[in-house]
Image (cartoon, rainbow, N blue to C red; front, side):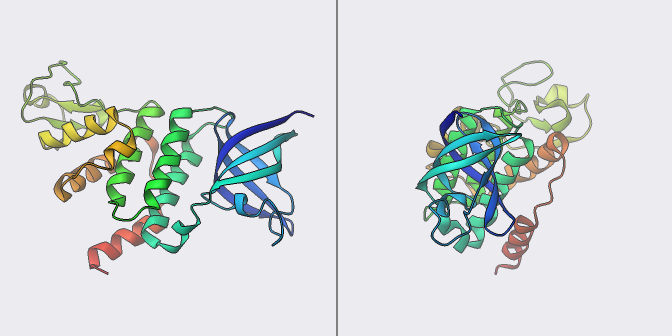
Length: 252
């Protein structure tokens, strides 16, 4: 039986029987797959460290029916420290859930794989604005799955010379002042926010992480993206993120 070697990131780990784990792995070569890691819960198992959520590892896989079996693994980066920081854990599980929910099984997406690995790396670093990094991930994720918002030009007349645009979720991007009069459900938007969105879409997330972005722009982008994603992806129940935002509002 053919053994396939590929890098992968564990999106989900669920106990099966006493010592086995069923893993949902986003792999570089195969896309999102399910794989069983037999005996991975045993303390001396060679598969233990690479079978945890967030684990980034080299996996050796054998096809067994509708899923795979992990025959060997070698950890590249565990990102286990994310579990000890509630903010990092909340944002990291959020982006993993996005990938798990909306990525089609067995469909590779190398750009998204690199984006996910780089985002987890950033969450594990100090002095990082995790909300901003999450917004960067969400924007690029929308682009990579075919829902990129248009901000370079007016989505109606294609004019790119505007000073006071609005954002219309249902039209998929910005409208110039003239066109905005003919559409409902427009959202006010700072022109600098449109430039920020385009900057994020045009650059890798490591470069984006170095930009100094004001809280005002982050808040505006967050509100717009929340509505945009609710419309195009549906509402996602994010308990940990909701708790985190509640604590932030209370200043805890």
